[in-house]
Amino acid sequence: MRQGEVYGFLGPNGAGKTTTMRILVGLMRPTGGSAVVVGTAPGHSLAKVGSLVEAPAFYPYLSARDNLKALASYAGVPGSRIETVLTEVDLTDRAHDKYSSFSLGMKQRLGVAAALLKDPQLLILDEPSNGLDPQGIVEMRDLVRNLGKGERTVLLSSHQLAEVEQICDRVGVILRGKMVAEGTVAELRGQTGLALTAEPEQAAGEALVRLLGPEAVHFDDDGFRLDVPPGRAAEINRALVTAGIDVSELRPAARSLEDIFLQLTGDPVATAEVAAGPLPPATAAGGSAS
Amino acid sequence: MLGSLSAELLKIRKRWAIRILVVIFVLVLVLLSYVLSYTIYKNPPPRFGENLPRGTTIADLLSALYPPNFHRVALSGAGGLGAAIAIILGVLAAGSEYGWGTYKTIFTQKPSRLTVWLAKFAALVLVSALLAVLVMAAAAATSAVLASIDGQALSWPDAWTVVRATGAEWLILVVWTGFGVLLAVISQQSALAIGIGLVYVLVVEGIIFGIFGSNPTLQNFEKFFPGANVTALADAFGPPIRGRFGGRPALVEPTQAVIVLVAFAAAFLVISSILIVRRDQV
Image (tube, chains in turn orange, cyan):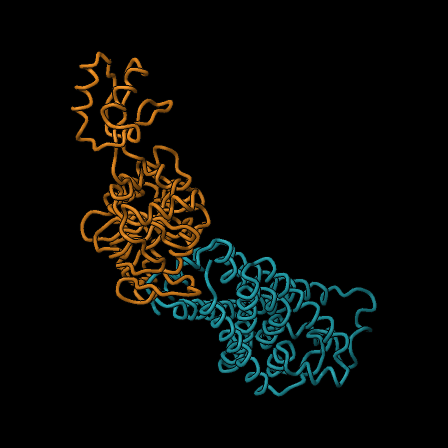
């Protein structure tokens, strides 16, 4: 990971995301390989690393404030940070309430607050939106986006691909313990084509094949998909209109991150093609994190 | 280390289960060792005196409840009730964290696992000290009340004896608390640890050694178990009052008892520390 970036960590259930995160914070020892976290071995720079690995875990009989007070004592953090992080995750009003009375969303926010107590250089968040309702997901997305501003580096594991797409600078995809793809979301998407809806379809298809060649024209329930650079949109539109064809939609057809994720994690052949194709070479799992 | 100790003390101080445990310990000591005994000695059932060991009278038993013996009464509860309470205390402090998953939270803060663990143990040692003082204070207060009711003069053991007795109570509670901590770490949960701990105290120390304790071969083994050394340490403050304290003679000298008990406490700390530091926290 590069300093200051928000890095999305994707993979299907059981791929090794949480295990990797546990190794990075020193909760587990790797059976092989090595990792560097903030310049040291995992578990040796905990003062600079804030983490929320898997579900948040706190003392149910303590209030939110007392939980943070205990953690601040362990970490040697001044008590003034407690109010700062409570404000940051919008829990100040409920700070006196016992953790056991919290909703799942509040527990997740307290988990993020605890991770922020040390004002860490590296923030590791393992599916912070897990179990949240749509409103909670939006709030958590905004929170993580804000946390990623500035010099802080954020490692975000998530099943919310829209969240990753909107927040993360770069993305890594892990499958069965191996990193199978890594890059920016744009790089992962690769070259985009065009999506076209036109009537009559038969005439439109013939005109498009004449113009672009049969290998570049695909048709399915959603209309035409054209494997051409988006910059040719005006030329195609002009040709169809001149041929008396009504064009109702013509837009860039980017693959969603969900499509890419499913392709990478569901089809080993496609995985190999994508990893070797438009992306930089895959990085081995257990690589360094800034 | 001080920060971790402060955090551990906060967690213990705010936990109702531990507060209740302390109150139960003190209440049971007062009710069973003093109130119930006093009521029986004052209103003995028919032929009660005939069942006492030779040379022991009801007046002897009653006098054991007065202030000169309060430290011995307090120590008499350290082996059975004290052991159970201390084991539960250790399990609650160490085992609940497995159930809540909070070890992963505290082990990803700044200090090393060993530092956090030593702080937890140190906090429990301090709580045991508080418990020992509370038990002694409750015993002293109750004995004073009973002496006043009976019009007896308030004479107390000398201060050094009280300090040593409190220290002995503290050491005994630390050993049993450490045993509870170790059981919790080994089983990685609370329920099983409490079950094993109580079964050990009741079955091994209570029934096996209690019933078959006169067997010389078994006594050679028993000398190295906590129970025999706890009894020896308690008896160091005066010979057991037969019929009141159980009456089994001490198997070891008080000095050996202290050494063995300190060794047990150290062993519980070292073994649990190794397990905590080396195990993956998942």
